[in-house]
Length: 279
Image (cartoon, rainbow, N blue to C red):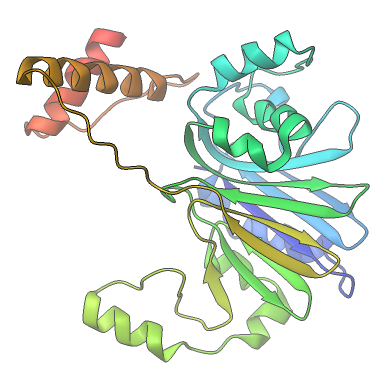
């Protein structure tokens, strides 16, 4: 897990706060950290290296002409297949990371790129010339983004405590009594609420565009329920096994050692068995 952070505003010096935001999330990414600052915008990243352990995977990551810059937390499981297609279209890669695939896809497809992604992700891409930020979260919401948006100022991060490193955010916070009621009733706080009224969870399966002080959030994914009739249970079991094989194989793509919890139950036994088969 990595940590991402960003501040977009026309009123504040954003360089120091974003460094404090990243420092507060060091536990999310002990391997590397980076920052970039522009006129009214700053991005930060703290890295846990999984794919491409070299400096080629450093973030914030720029595209080749340095018109776009990316901060990314997560994994794109089908990045190898996507990279091959992008190379056929003439895209040149300088790293072996899945992060760079996102930059090239965005160059070609903008928000439509999300239809091609299989993985868990939370990322932001800043268009330096257009002064426009694109932020997106995976369909299920496995990777977090929290945000503060008031008076044209947009601050986002992987954790609430990172947002609180920005003095304007910290000074604005008030407890959300509805969220507290939910917590004591349900033992969790339902999204998009958080313990603070001014901080919200960026919704899963959505993307956002921030430009000129305005934030627009759009849904890009809805679950599709298909009804399929199999000839017999054997056919059904075979298809399920194939789906699990491909899913687990994708998740084993890593440049560092990996493992799994084996409790002896049916699900963990199945996962470890298929990992052994695919290793």
